[in-house]
Image (cartoon, rainbow, N blue to C red; front, side, top):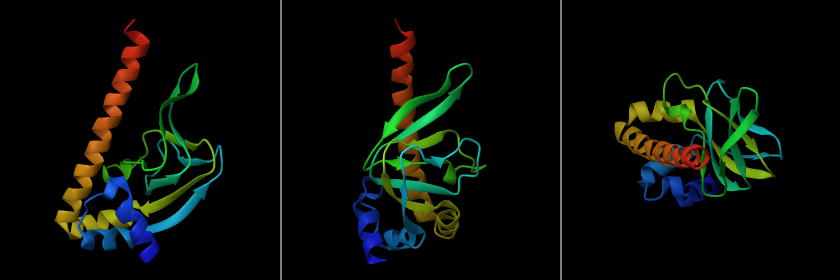
Length: 151
């Protein structure tokens, strides 16, 4: 467990998180790997896990009628994949596909939600961190839209 705790402690998403919370999060974590073209997340499926990317690249994709999958962001080491685990109805809003061999820490969203309900300080910390990711991704998507349609 100390190995996972150390990895979680050092991941940017959990930077500065209280040590007692690191231990709680680690209890919900496991190492995973995905081969190129393997999906971590599928749109509208239950959002049971989220991933701390340690190595590799992951494309966040949305389906576009008549165009197939469109990548709206590419993530890599130090990023988090999946935020719907914290927000009801806990269903994924996009696909996430490994572009190459990707190693990550999977965190069981249900396990962590239960811990957040029991310790609202932990819940508040997770909510602040997830909202920051959402704002960053919304801004990045906005810039892409301006690039495509702002001409």
